[in-house]
Amino acid sequence: MSELITDLDSRIFDEAGGEYYVSVAGELRPDGRWEGWLEFVPTDDSAVLVTPTETYQSTRADLAHWATTLTDTYLEGAFSRAIPVRGDSLPARVVARAIAA
Image (cartoon, rainbow, N blue to C red; front, side, top):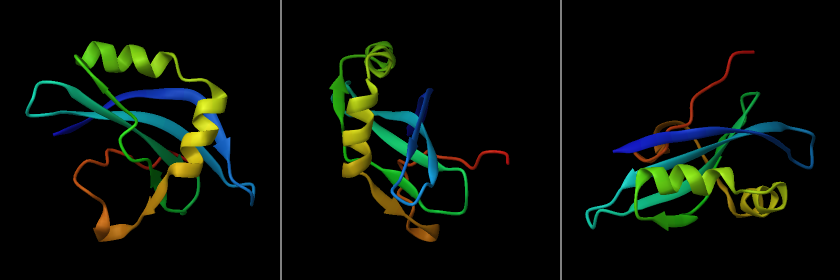
């Protein structure tokens, strides 16, 4: 089952000025490793953007540590790799949630 690992302090802005906050999510794999990805959650009604798998780590703690090493440059690149998910098509692994206005 997918879990929120951490919310990052970084914000990303798209070309139209839309603002997204960044979360790191992960899931324990059958082989015992953790798979991690990024979720870009909009501050408006835009679609959540989710990256493909960004990392595999040995433990949940290692995945949480990996999240602390992400730079703004890395996040910008990940944002360009992210794809939108909408409505009922949200995959089970997405843990994104709306934020308060």
